[in-house]
Image (cartoon, rainbow over all chains, first blue to last red):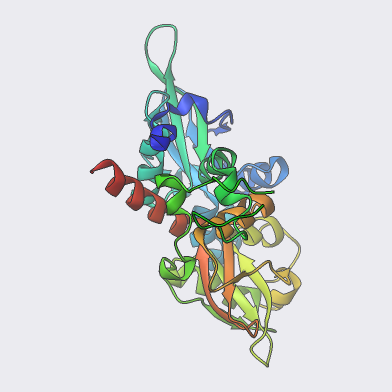
Length: 155
Length: 149
């Protein structure tokens, strides 16, 4: 069954380490970090206690309407609190479903630390899933301009 | 060269769907010369990630996305109300024909790292757009239906 790929655990998919910031960090500093390090999102809090996620969308929603004042606010005031978090043992299909249900492009992923406590250690993005599909279904995706039908002879 | 014995699998059939069928929203346009501030208000109000920029003849000349807001507007030394969106948009964006398949959309998004692609008709005029979120929602739906069998 080729949908086995979607049953594989997330640990096979994402290698991106999340960037954590303190909730008290001014929004201006968060933007500098995201721009300078090309971070698509920031996680707020710590690996063991992640309280929110700050995305490009969060910035778009608030920054331009409120002008410079918002830059002095803290990350915790703009972030999306209590983000959906999956574990390394969830499947790639689970991540796809969670992204579709919530309209998310990034999901924090936990694994267990030495004491068995869940800590956020990765971020999986929607582009990771697209890249995976491209790698696993190259005939269908990398050559989509071939109009292939069963029985066609390409000699 | 394509293997003549190749036939699409169940998952590969996901990718042959016409992208126009799963594009959920009409594209939002702003005209060339619109201020950045106005373009941002369109993004905010419509809960969308991109607006298309067109010239007086209706031709697509650019795309302005929420990523552009972060990279080219925030903390930059520009006044969004006094600067045209033309100055910060991506010009001549990659497009897809409105007859394209999901595979073609995934292909272009993968190669170009795009999250939004305008759909254009035979004359090259923009008639829609597809976002990576639309594709994820579609794939999740198809996968769920397949696994429920």
